[in-house]
Image 1: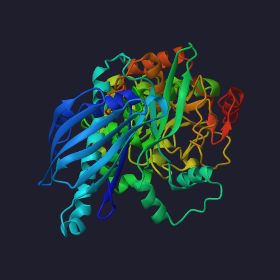
Image 2: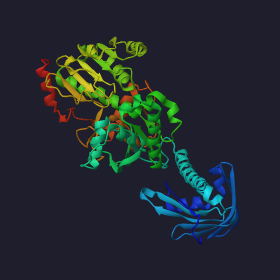
Image 3: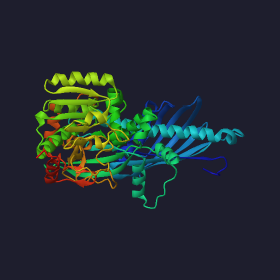
Image 4: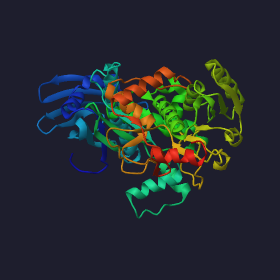
Length: 525
């Protein structure tokens, strides 16, 4: 383009989850563009050969019609397509598409163009605005390319994957504001945090992203899958401020998993609220199968409680159980399972309606007596077993309220009880719903666990399902976890080398002998 007066420049790029030749083929099929982008009214081929096309374009942007005839030259060796307007409403429009090879079979598609309106006075006054509208057309085109690629990928998959997708994604987030700062310092040890107000707002603006790419995760059977840890930029305190914003962020995190071509994604921590509260409404916004991972988590909680009771000399048939947050998805599943083994189950909840519903559920088991309570501290005073299943940013119970010899399984997120400081040696507190895994999982920053070989049950469930090629919404909705599904996922987990993690309290791993010693201190053994 001769001269540079009143010339505006455009550069737009997007990573597409296909190889370079596939991306170039999409750009070459210009006749498909009107079906993808509403602003493109016509893109008609006038002449075409192997390296050159002449096309007629009609575009309407916010009521502004622009027409031109364009020549495109294809450089297949260098993966470049050069284009230039030959005639039309614009004095000049020319540029090129380039296709840059990315990781894992992806392609960064870049379009660069120079535009000159060529109308006196108007060029200076509104030329920039027209250019921005043209930029929007290019952005829309690339976005629609990406969405159509992903749509076709997930339409092809059936319950066994159909080779269209593979692997697992796990979505996590900082468990509080201090954890966020800790993570940022892992990236820059000299990081001096700004004010919480500023940092929180900037954090809220960030999109979801892959923070840990797992190229190979190997099962005990020798089966191999891949995966990704996806950071969802929420902290629990945000839930009270704008739940709709949180759900949008969880949807965006699932979209990141889709762009990676993963087969299933697990919602960790507070992101599981999307499944518990929004259910099928949420699923309509994503293509990838989603699981909360709550079924394996609940199964591990029950297995851990049963093991702890055996080591500490507690006879389950005579035990009293309290489930804090027992009306939630994990809590209710644990309550139902333990009601079949014990003599009394107390459920705590802030909602009287939820307590009434759980009373019917526990009584249907026809074994344990039911009690309901709104007071966590009072509810645990006489409990032999406490399952803390309520996720809350702050502590939900006072450790001094537990009776001597109590077994306390903290399955909430964050684990306020398991990490609380105490000098009590007559109770067992352990982080529940935790799995020992067959390969290391090390995202490079602290996720609140004792070793790279242990992982949250919710994440582990997605890994197991990916290894099995079962890309389905295994744990979804609220109150749908059955004992049969708990047994099924636990059996599959053990097949692949996943098992109950060693007990750990805070950062300290407890041996079976140490757990038995707590029982002796409390006078149980």
